[in-house]
Length: 426
Ligand code: PA5
Image (cartoon, rainbow, N blue to C red):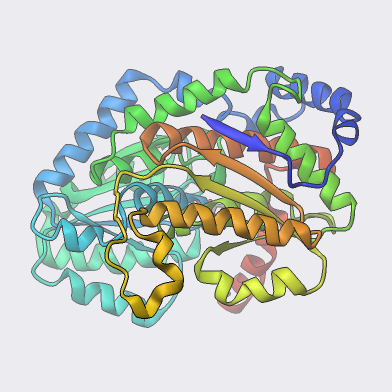
């Protein structure tokens, strides 16, 4: 499903193979749940999520679709980027315009910033709309999420009176935290975040699945794609496990002095997927004074901006190109006016074919100039493949973080601003 092409990485096979024994050891540790047993709930989750849980998500989703024009998803970090990334990857490009009159609720995300105007604007959008809310927080206490929920709860109470509770869905820790308490006290419907799955590893759990289902995505297919990926990544051998190979290549490039990894895509629909990837790698690896700085770009858009610094600037980055090979739409270029004569040979081609040419030319230009390129090729964007891609990166980042010598499952750095903030409102 996911092909890793190493030809433009500038990395020698022998340098990769040196890692094999370390990788095998880490792999055995991961599957044996030896060192990180408290954080590996995601490892097999697509295979072990119960039919009951999936049906519950589907039932809630049907309810929301039936009752609502709008679903507000409240959460931040790993509690919102995942579902947004999948929904936008599979649905976006003018989605709301195209589905203007359809029964699929529009999904708006809230609680990932504290911008006054953002909240105010959303409240305007909600006027005269039937609204449901999915508030997501594993801890149940993240400030952005709690405050956004408080504002929306007020709005819902005014609009629906006591029956607002029928339109609220809480996704939180299965055992503890303020949101769990609220769900129990108020009898609000809830979904469980398994204890051993951290925020950024949770997109394939109820955290991400409810909003995906509401948007019309078949969550069973997403889980199936992830499950298939689990079996494709069973081996510890670098010749057979592309997620581990990707992790090793990143580590080699890091050791060779690269400081930045740029995830490149050619699809605007992958904007939030790139953000999800960024969050996953930044929070998992950036600690103890170590880690590649993960960032992203869209080509050809950014070839007209970042393209300059990539080609000609400081040699401190490498690119990971996520290339989607086929698309459903086949927009043909016809009748190029003679004033644009230099492009006449492109007549009859699809826009997608030309996107592919840009990809090939850019790889050639950048690698010629010594910029390593790792290519991840996926045939098309669909539910199964997005599930597979997510799982691929979860496995890659866990191997990569451990190879780097950090704990990929915590995020101590993020706590510091929270502490400083708490000191201000004591
Ligand atoms: O990956 C993580 O653990 C974080 O990004 C969290 O998802 C984020 O901080 C939100 O936490 P919570 O779900 O507890 O509100």
